Length: 417
Image 1 (cartoon, rainbow, N blue to C red):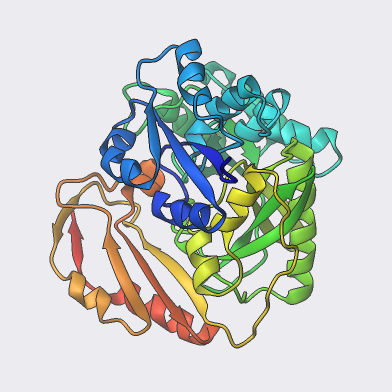
Image 2: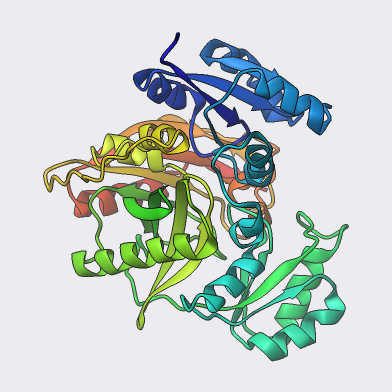
């Protein structure tokens, strides 16, 4: 009788490369079964997934057929790293009798407005917010929330259609545009108008917010890895992060980690990994949002900085295995970074890419991944989809990191139309 377990992975574009997951699975004597749908990225990845484990192609399958196909593999656990597969994963887990996000807590985990209400109900944090599905509701939302405020999709990721507004006229224009099917950017069916959390004064290139990824087992969350952030690009686009040493003070980091674990518990996540974003305000840390999956770049940053092994933790957690609660700390360890180059807010499309080698020659840069090509949209409304390049590397000090970021931003390598 085999002592190996099988882990079902509902696959989609997400925060962990399948090759890294396969490494962690092998180290834990775990076999992988990838469940894919008809999404273009998943279908393109089929050759790779077939090399890493068994594959169930669920495109076009009904629920009962899908249950039969995946059930035949007798999975002992289930996991997803894709924001857009969280709900289907939870429903499948429920039918298979596997631990995952409770169905009754899915709205608080996946919908930003429901999450805000849950925070208030649990006494975690109260931020004024209102949901808008029709431009006719904007004035009522403004009366409830006030200004300044931030507009963001109720369901979304990667800074898509996220922008602050400071006047009623600006709010009407932004919300109407975002809800319009024929608007200038991607359309939303519902957006949230939310009280703007103002960050404490922070010098660039450092951000006034931070992320904590928590490992959850036996119903309790523990901080696993902290991703310190770079300053946002206008209007609210991420420029990436770094770890494992932060520019943020140790005493504040401890407060942030405690708040992150409380937020994970509040939304009902009882197993797996959750990513929590927290704003550093003058009055202390405030929760921005909880994501029910591993955060972007976290595995890469944690491994390269010697801080944690998120892929390994994800496998163990999904299978209900004991997690190592120790967290190595080495003040001499490298600071790993993942920096995103984003287009200026007035750019419409990429016109030309002409000098990528200049980016690779910047000190402390190990790899440059170009994410766009001439003719692609550079519209800020697309959020991370319009990112230009990802730059990864490592430094010894925060001063070196600040200098590296400055040099990257000075390189002339791309033009816009």
